Length: 130
View 1 (cartoon, one colour):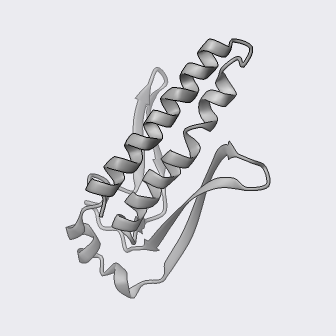
View 2 (tube, helix red, strand yellow):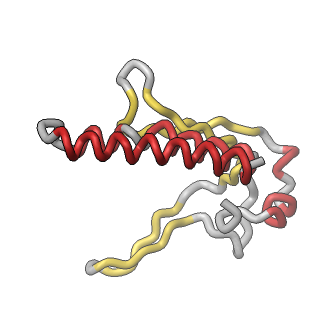
């Protein structure tokens, strides 16, 4: 997260005095009744010439820019924790949608790998994320 928004940027834009908005990001994972969401707290800021407010890329058709309104992440540490939680909750849905369940050996192997990943995630999260 620190490569997106560093603390100097946050402090220089005096974001604490601004209105904090809640944005909920959703992908097509989880149940239709209860989709898995990632909540991010953001604040609008006054963009300066050195601020990056667009996404630039190149492809075979040339250069492109997708401009975005100037918002910054208001709670970087909380957002980091919520991203890790979102990744942990949503990961099992991807193989379930991609794999053919008719082959029990492949399906069992992925289920075991996911259980190991969750255990490892919890251990890493406990020791390194504060």
